[in-house]
Length: 126
Image (cartoon, rainbow, N blue to C red; front, side):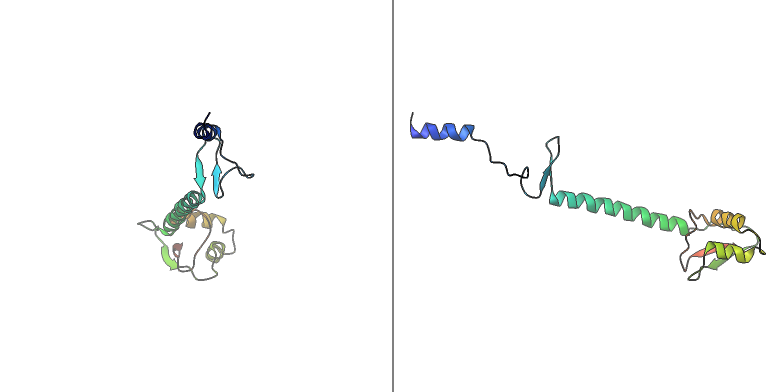
């Protein structure tokens, strides 16, 4: 056997060396054999973050949208810093329980929760 064929046989049967951590640096292997690089993980995380931001922005616009025709006796008011929905409702109920009025205010203004932002416009009973 010549040196040439022995070297060819050796190359054909040689297996690549494996590192102790299971593969190349910065690349992880999944069970189905696909490889996800560090850049690939970054792109996936960035895409998920962008989708999350879109949902937050869409929710903010939905929370500030007011209905087209306000109920009679209700006027538009701008939320001041530090004001709460509880405080606004309590000032409009003569010492009574403001929970019913809070539910009405949320319904009329299309609010999902009780969070208010200063500068937000709300329809409130006069």
